[in-house]
Length: 336
Image (cartoon, rainbow, N blue to C red; front, side, top):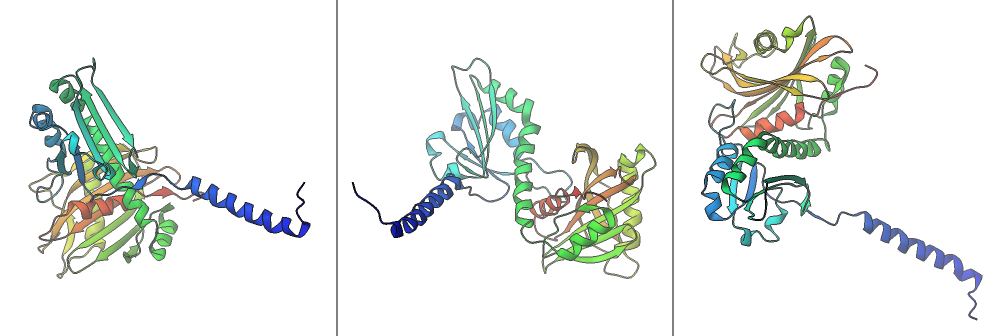
């Protein structure tokens, strides 16, 4: 029998412990590659005849249609169509994939909404049916859910990015004044703070992005109505958001286009989302905004989180999504 000297046992134990730790660490690492592709882009996997059919028309009408609430037409997503035999390893790494396929063996249409199949983070939608009409009907019945899947994924990616580096002063002031947390990126700054109002901005030579947060006592359910929300917004911006010239100020631009509103679930409570246009009274500035209005039941106060963009001459959808992702990062702070 071979005997191992006592003085060699400790080094051997250390060595095998190290090997075990390395092995465990490797097992924890994700086996899937990081997803690729640019924001607001979808790879559509479809045979040419199917893509040119009425089913393809329905897909284009939604994804390539104009986003409401913008001053110039911009599509929800840029679509890149490839045939099934062209959908190889590299394209399977794309962050957004949409697949439509004819399957003659399928008795009823099937719509699958999945995450992280070939890469991470990734959203994949596959609709299969025996006929073109079956694909079209399945898509039409779930198109809002499908659009939300891709939109929420874009928001989550931005929130993950912004959560890595935050403007500490702005985060602290928002928390102290409103009792909520907000992931304000480091390149924003606190522009103004008044009673029940905070204005946070990001400025470059080409664009301006801003976050407005304000609150007021909750009295009745009219607080969720779009006309009330618009009126209150104008009151705060006239007081606290001046334009570049004397006596100019921000207001909602609703003379020709009315803001669009809908009720959503925000952190397990009802909230009113409004998308519209703003302008500067007595000056020549304007752009899109999005806002979320809800009631903080702890204090019986209405809170509005509002984000706007000013970017003359360039697309604004991506910039608006960035401020939207900041607004939707909100959470209540415990014990406030």
